[in-house]
Every structure is written in structure tokens, then in C-alpha cells.
Image 1: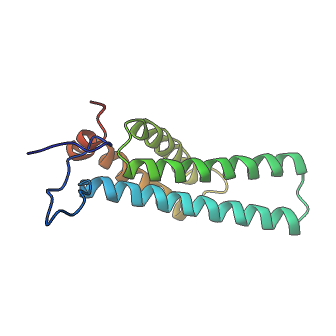
Image 2: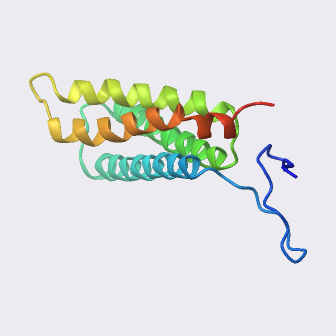
Length: 147
């Protein structure tokens, strides 16, 4: 029988009376891992910005502090989204897509302008594109669909 667990995902069949673990689609796990990696990178950015704030005099302390706070909020946001993606929560698709679109915009900006840094643009563009593709795969949509 194909019963659903509390999270709305199919249950594993019981073997020798063992508890049932939810089956997560492999693409959902890959999606969560990529978003989790993005959260770790943002945490690294927060650490770097904090070190810079403490060791180098910024042109504006208010601006530097605001950027630090926004980066910290982003890191926490991505970590929460990654955890809840593993739990197959429906709202994570919209949250993840929003972040990836922002990341794509920043990546495109890295290819243009006076201080263009195409290498960073590629590092932002590739995972964002991969995550957007994963978000719309049938197994991820089915796992995170609200029933």
C-alpha cells in the first residue's frame, strides 16, 4: 500500500517491524544539498564581511553594517529553506526560485561593467540554473505539492 507519512511523502514499507522512513526523491535531496551549500557560502561571506568590518575602516560604517546584516539574513534564510526542502514543504519552491532569480541577476552583473568578474559570475550562474531546473522536475514538484 502506498501510504503517506506526516510530511505527505510515501512511506517505506516496513521491514521486520522497523519504523517507516520517508522516501525522498533523489533530485529533492540534490536540490536541498545545493541550497545548503549556498547557505554555507553565504555564512562564509558573513564571516568575511565581519572580519573586514573589524580590520579595515569602511567608507561608511552604516552601509557596511547594513550589508553585513543583509548577508546574515540571507544565510539564515537559505539554511531554513534547505532544511525545509528536505522536509518537502511546498513553500520552499517559491523561496528557492526567488533566491535563484536574485542570484542570476547578480551573476549577469558580474559579466558586465568596469569591474566585471566573469569567474564569480560563472560560480553564481551554474548553481542557480541547476537549481531552477531541479525545481521544475516532476519528482520535486510531486514531492513538494500541497495535497
